[in-house]
Image (tube, rainbow, N blue to C red; front, side):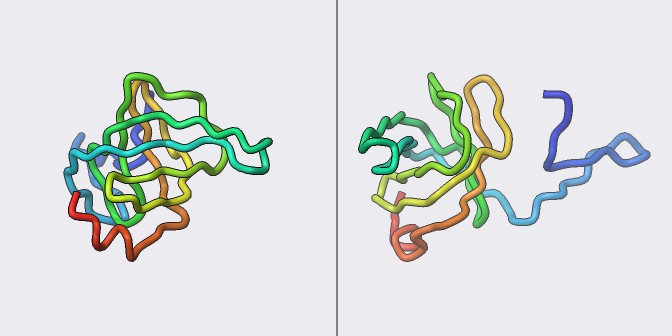
Length: 111
């Protein structure tokens, strides 16, 4: 990737953080769920690891990440689910924006 959307280089050559929400380091399991009842009822799921999160999104890693377009569901270890969209992708990592979150479940999720 040529540019990093979360930072900009200053004239002094330093990077300035442009993130809108602070990041928290996390090591937790999650599952990407692709497909809905609208797609003939077929769903495919892929295990992943949440590396860091914020109120607006998260960074995940997996051995295999399928091409993802549009909205999909991410289910966190405690059962909380959110609709998400991919904002950036690298070989084995994705940056996700959470667009609809089960906030009650996330708040009570100990993981």
